Image 1 (cartoon, rainbow, N blue to C red):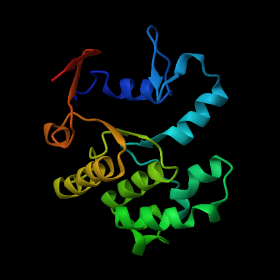
Image 2: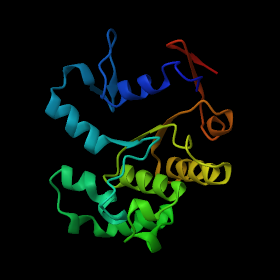
Image 3: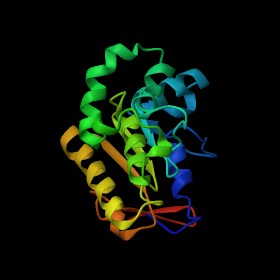
Image 4: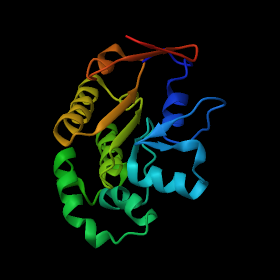
Length: 186
């Protein structure tokens, strides 16, 4: 948690292997990121980490199901092998009835839930969420935060959320503050 420009997103990108640290080391699920080549990092990101971005990053001409299945396709897996998982995730995020809609036909909250579902499809151990409620109204924000909390508690996933909102941070088990690139534990 921290103000804009404090380094929260940079920290998240470092944890996800999207940026490289200038010093020190980072281990994700016991794997040292610095010794991984690009291919290994890419596989680790697809299989071990689910990303939820503030601006959703959905593909506009794909429907909900297709957007959720993008990581499966990128990993070279067969979509048909994930149909049961897709159904489970659609139920978890409450979008079973919107499966054939494109992002343009969805509200901001629904789009964010698609992004969360996409992050979950490969059953990663870690979910990295960058300001997941930054573009949502308070009611929808609460729904998204409750969903992330449920994923953590019920599914046993580690959810790392960066936010500047004390309300959003309150949904976490632990708060780590970032200010001017420095990390402190609350």
